[in-house]
Every structure is written in structure tokens, then in C-alpha cells.
Image 1: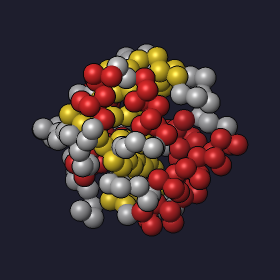
Image 2: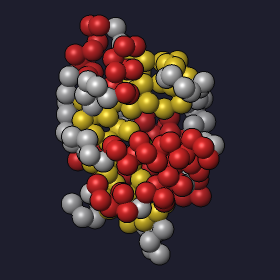
Image 3: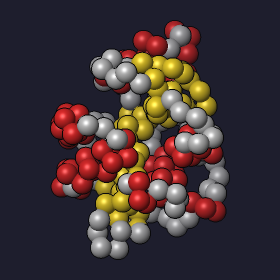
Image 4: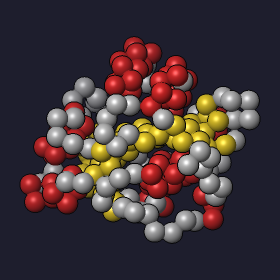
Length: 192
């Protein structure tokens, strides 16, 4: 497998594959995936957009991740801002990179793909802080939670409910830039 940096047009060309990986990783219903397709297509034009993809030797998409500069007027940013205590807003949101999506096909999970994607994405990110949301889960059993904790993400908000989703989410954050590169996250990204 190889990790590559994607430009907006790269992601748009593979949008069907991106939505497929997203659906497999999140277990969402088909009708929700069509809605997400539109959101993802619009996200590529946001300021600070950065994306990575993991491709198999035959070119199949094994995983992807992307984010952009979080700002007022963006749905996720405004939801999180409303949930944060007023004195925490400047610290987390004034110069923030938002990890919007980070997914790996279930068959490719457990092989360091997500860690390499996250490290590469954060290395390309602009901002002083990074935020992401992830469904609440048992931190010891969830691969995503173990990954985020290993990368130094801490709790910003817990048991957060987004409109339209009955599941509770955690908002996790950390300062940028990343400091050290763990050995298990090698090799590097292609195309940077």
C-alpha cells in the first residue's frame, strides 16, 4: 500500500470510492451516504483543504482522510462553538484545523493505515490546534479511540449530540504541530 497526498480534484475523481469507504467504516445507511456525497464534494473547496489517501497495489482505495481550516459559518464549527464554554472557544477555534474525515476500509484496519494517514494529514495541516469528532465508544476496544489517544488528542467535549444523529460524539483536540514521529508510522507520504 502507498500513502499519497490528494488535491481536491483527486478526491472528486474518486468520490464514489470515498463514499464507499466512508460507508463501510461508519456503518451508515445507503440514503445517508448520498447526502454525505454532496457534503464531501463541497468540502474540497474550503480554505486550507488537505487530503490523503491510501491505495492498494492495484489502485483500490483502502482509506482516506481530509480536513480544512475550521471557521465561522461552517456547520460543524458552529455546532462545536455553541457547545464549548465561552472561555474555551478562542483556545480551540481561533486557528484550528478540522479533521473532517479519517476512514479505513474494515478489511485494511489494524495495519497502521489510519495512523499513517493521520500523521500525514496533521503534518500538512495549517493551524495551532486540531479538532475532530468521533462516536463515543469504549476507549480500550475502539481502534479509532486508541489511535487518537496515541496521537495525544484530549477531551474537549464529551457526550456531544449533533442535530440529526442520535449517537453521542466526543470532540477531541490537540495542539499543532506534531512533535515526534513514532516508528510504527513509517513510511512517509508520496507526493509531498
